[in-house]
Amino acid sequence: MRVERGRIRSGGRRERSRARRLAMFDFLIVGAGLSGCTLAERLANELQARVLVVEKRSHVGGNAYDAYDDNGVLVHKYGAHLFHTNDWEVYGYLSQFTEWRFYMHRVLTWVDGQLLPFPISLETLNQLYGLSLTTEEMEAFLARRRESREINNSEDMIISQVGRELYEKFFANYTLKQWGMPASELEPEVCARVPVRFNRDLHYFADRYQGMPKQGYTRMIERMLAHPNIKVLLNTDFEEIRHLIPYKSLIYTGPIDEYFHHKHGPLPYRSLRFEFETLDQEFFQPVCVVNYPNHFDYTRILEMKHATGQQCRATTIVREYPQAQGEPFYPVPARRNSELYRKYAAEAEGLTDVYFVGRLGQYRYLNMDQAVRAALDLFQRIRAQGR
Ligand SMILES: Cc1cc2nc3c(=O)[nH]c(=O)nc-3n(C[C@H](O)[C@H](O)[C@H](O)COP(=O)(O)OP(=O)(O)OC[C@H]3O[C@@H](n4cnc5c(N)ncnc54)[C@H](O)[C@@H]3O)c2cc1C
Image (cartoon, rainbow, N blue to C red):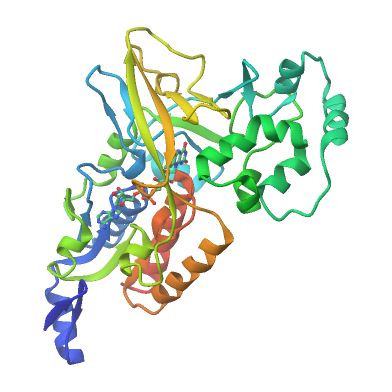
């Protein structure tokens, strides 16, 4: 028997099945983010499977990781993570591992020297233009401005909803900074996520379940992993153990192109640099997130105390600077990238006992609830296969 590319290879079927019997782990899971940890929890608790989670960072939680900084402020190390979902099963599933703090997210955006509610609502337009429009008048106001056009990209999407002037003020520069390319080159869905509200609702999300894990995401995820059948290996890249640890099945939540050693070329990702600053004051800004869709190099300033509800004297703010290099945070949703991804997805389909899931494994922006949903669905598939 020899161990090659992380899977047990052998000449004969009998030898292969013997090797599988001897494997220490039923599942090797690459990545301790929400996707990997949901699968580890389900497999261990429901199937009594022996699971090894390998994570290259020094902590579990993936991008949802939160921790107390040197000043005792609970911060999100990889950008603000606000939980929201309409999927009661996902909400119920996570609720086994945490209680929730009620929190409805709000975002303001800095436009023309004012902090305005975002997404664009009746309140936004009234403040921006010093008007007192009603819902019907807002409909008429936007109807005069929107351009009817074929929707081929995100610019078309926004201009057809709110017109060019509001597009320029709220979206054009933000999108350019965030993605390193104009909205005209991005798939329509990227900006379609942002609604327009014809009422005074100032909340960012409209989902039925919204909140923050009471003791934070890391604590919640640690509880998910607290099973004797789950071992976690931190500070270890999958590549380091790929050929060393025998296992029966592999669940891969890292970048799918990396798994195949970029054989079709690298899939582009957008990254962020986070600049943390602690201030000796209770709060810095009125809400958790303020967008800067203008000439500032950063796109947003975050202040997590609004969301976590933590009461302490100091506050920590985070400026987010988008960049091309660095940790792969956002799959870039452009058509040519989807085509490249499909080549890797086709390769993945040719493998047995290897599953790709999660934001990087599926090369798709997934909110946390969608990541958990995809993991729960994969678990059902694996169970049905009798693994
Ligand atoms: C800036 C930012 C803000 C976000 N805000 C929100 C929000 O407000 N609400 C929301 O619902 N969602 C939000 N998300 C999305 C959320 O982070 C994802 O839904 C979630 O992290 C998906 O979990 P995952 O396990 O698929 O991926 P990840 O969290 O990325 O976990 C993957 C893990 O795999 C590890 N890994 C990768 N390659 C290897 C390897 N070769 N070897 C070992 N380990 C490896 C990585 O280190 C990482 O820990 C945000 C994302 C970002 C980037």
